[in-house]
Length: 86
Image (cartoon, rainbow, N blue to C red; front, side, top):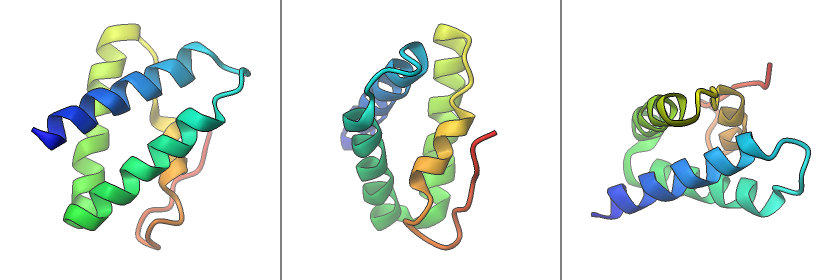
């Protein structure tokens, strides 16, 4: 149940950031980073990858925008996760 709630929250946060480019989204980005930390603590990099994959598919399907650049918000959680905005 917690995973589903985190997934829904992350979809909402990512969607907001993508639909409001250039606006003040620091709070949303901070929470996205917190969720990444929770995922890493629970299941490591595999959990992060799997979760982001699901969120990416949902956001692409719902608003036709790719959240891939937001992966970089999880940089620094572990040295195994290094993505850069395009």
